[in-house]
Image 1 (tube, rainbow, N blue to C red):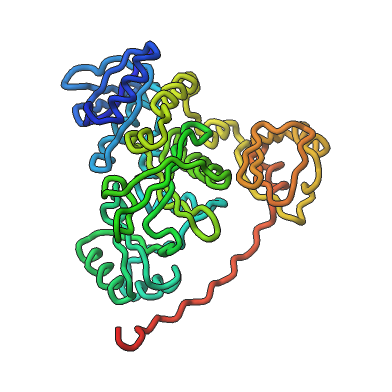
Image 2: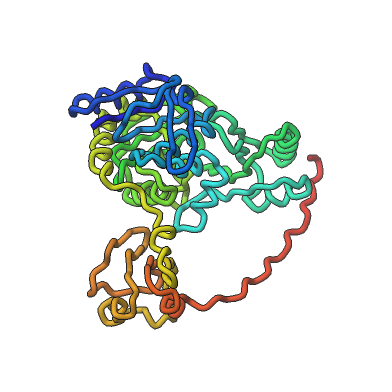
Length: 396
């Protein structure tokens, strides 16, 4: 297989390890500078050029897109996708994971532990937002940043307000996030490859530093990951559409709290801490997945008029509860249940004897008129009470 690794740093540890692992398995590998590509667009002929010439043919690519070139890098990956080349990390997934707000929005609709987070622009909303996430101290994060850059701990409401106003004045968008005190100075990095965690480590900050990034002097140790953390890491990566991801989690009192999902996680720290051959696992996944291109179900399966895809949670009062798929005769009614998600575990292509439980999430394809009869009734949303404007405590 001809594999192209898109990287601006051919000598960095991660790129060298991926190349070594691929070549040891008999593949032909070329490391290519992402910024040296140019894109050509015309009817039915998407084209890519590298250093002024037509890009060499590739069977698959491994994108290593740095935060500083996200826009152009994902455009290049997207062009490979349009040309039918398998990409280990999809352009859309890279874009979503790189934007902290967008990724948190995507995760928030699922059963994923998250630190309480707020995003505001109106100066008058800053204090209410800080209150909503639990009050000071709070974490303030730039929407794009890696290795702990752009992450600030504000000890008081007054300091938090001043920092946010300053950053917004400099046209920087920021998140306000609850400070998980019980996990101060440490976090868990789980490395997801495919549908499993292949290695995990706990990172501990140096001295009084609250950021545990190894690049900031933190230390790392191998970790035998608790099943709840493993399920959370795999689920978070799958929600964002990433086959390979570094999922950073805080060890909260209520369990794992996903802090960030990294689409281009480094290998050096975690391979060094765990001794795992993660590069080999990545290449093995590439070999298995290269023959299965990404398919957008909603676009492809909805082409037939009157048919579509629906995903819904089974309510306790639903007539589906405690019935087997076979007893519901869904196939005879032109409905195919693609998967059932139960307590964070996906049951793919469920059999007829699978019993539906309240709280299950069903992913179905079929006739829209029939699907409408399965969906829970739409309930009017309750109007939330307005949070009164917060007043500064005396002395602040």
